[in-house]
Length: 426
Ligand SMILES: [Zn+2]
Ligand SMILES: [Zn+2]
Image (cartoon, rainbow, N blue to C red; front, side, top):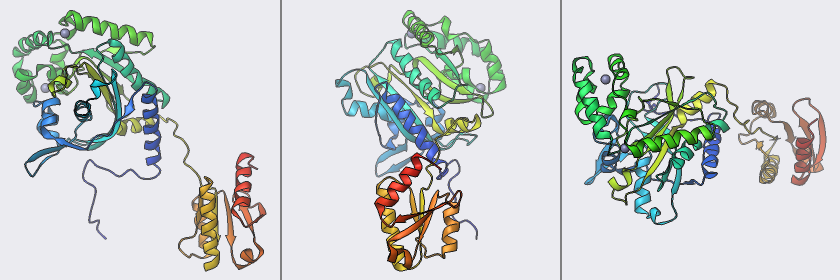
């Protein structure tokens, strides 16, 4: 039979066996953030398109080509392409900045971008992100980077490179933009089409173009570090001092500019070489102008987004340990209606005690039931029939060696036996 419905390109199903890894990673992520005072926020999947145009930037690929947007009634709506804009909108709308500073939030959410699917990259992708609003100090930058670093360490992902850069502020970046324009103006014929178009509005983006010719030109382009104002220079220096003091190895990469318009000063990425071409697993930076831009009080802020799809791919590629899946403690087989009811009630009682118990729901033959118990990896099994109900006893069998024990047919006897066996396995 031909498959009538397939998932859309760039989307996927996460099935049992895989989903446990996701649950583990998201739990550790939220715990790591909580230890630094980041509380979880849950925001809507859809927002006004205008919010993303304003924050992510009209000239970015994300807004120009990749957003899933639609009109409903007279509202222009988009699926969120990232988590920061919605979070900042929520912070302003809920007056969180009137409370204690800084406001520290974290989230797990899926984002949507219609770009070319590639390894570890999806059109619906999943992010763990944190945002810290209200602090201008480089200590906040170091702390935010430290959350990503701490998480990656706890998960056993140790061979990522941390690269940092400063892209200046509204005081110093215009000068740098002019220097970039002047430099590239002389090389227009060698630039790719996109870079030619970007040169006027967003020259910074030319530095991270992946085209061979543009990369070669970027190598000899003016460096932002030469143009930083005193404030930006001091901030960057302060960040480097703190990262070193925390024992975080990093390198300065002048080509990191991040794709979104709202970044100022610090930008950073954690990069992996373990899934083919170099891939950014986590990226973020400071966005001191964004809260004001979106109508809130002028507030320094920063954050990061960490791609869970890629992170899990990297963890699998380098063999990071994941917790073991829970395994079935007991399979209760049954013959006949009355025994089947007894099996279900016994299973229900044992599950209430925290045990993983299965019973027959398909009226299968005993042989088929035992095959199923075996497939499900049950540690113990028993079969209930007329005789067991009459005697009020049943034999429980250890699947590993066939050893049998007779038990009273009630929940407490089974619980005591299974828990005792778990504590002192044979
Ligand atoms: Zn500056
Ligand atoms: Zn280019």
